[in-house]
Image (cartoon, rainbow, N blue to C red):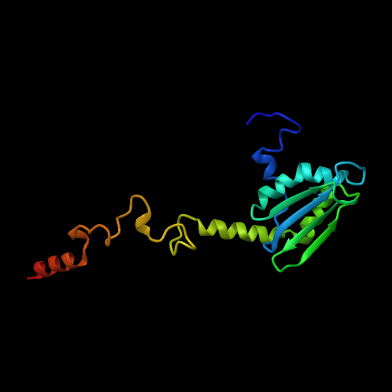
Amino acid sequence: MPMKGRFPIRPTLQYLSQGSVVFKDTVKVMTVNYNTSGELGEGARRFVFFNIPQIQYKNPWVQIMMFKNMTPTPFLRFYLDSGEQVLVDVEAKSNKEIMEHIRKILGKTEETLRQEELEKQQRFHPANFGPPKYCLRECIYQVEGQVPCPSLVPLPKEMTGKYKASLRASAQD
């Protein structure tokens, strides 16, 4: 990707993953109302320019809409899945203050994020076996180098219990 334009670092994966806001599952839509001119809306403009891409990257399930020059003061509105709306006034705030405020009221806590990451790691750990909903593999035979499933490929007769029992019986006779 060529590094062109204003602040070419913005579309990089490293920059996008540095975002600190991961919304709770109840947040469905976020609208940003801001003006392209005026001193009181500078923080909102910087928020849209620098932080909205990070929020979109960390929250792909949230719809984000931006409205320019439609209101006298900048604000954010969040629509929750319960039908409730949360209104956040961002007039005269910096983009970092806006991010911190949003993270406090609608973001997941650090503890919740750590626990979700741990559950994700446990689910996809290669040593775990079980239903596909919870584990990466259903059975040990799916691991490369293991004996194939007896229902798919018949086992060699030396590995079957009946053959071993018949050998023992013939040895005792």
